[in-house]
Length: 141
Image (tube, rainbow, N blue to C red):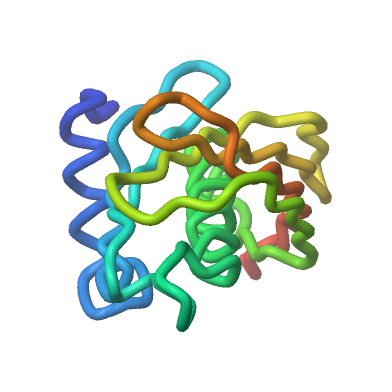
């Protein structure tokens, strides 16, 4: 039996308890046939010393969202998914509100997957563009 979208989001958010995702208040909010969206509040927990969103927190949001996309769209009965490389270009600073990561596949291979993750703010301004490579590792039978 396949889970509903709402049940899948509840399950995804519940497995993030006691992890970096909970520490950064990252929440999965939507997914579709070819995308996953998560949000993260911008506050003192994710600031760099001068009071703007830390690039490392942005990258953590991007990797979290891209990895979840790989989990949603690959058969987890057959493989483990791991991130193996991530790059980020930070375009604009953010001081408050939330940022939203939207992950989409560029390439979905059997072994490696390449995802583009765009980070936007509450006004849909582009904040960062990240690329994430994941690998599907076969489970032992």
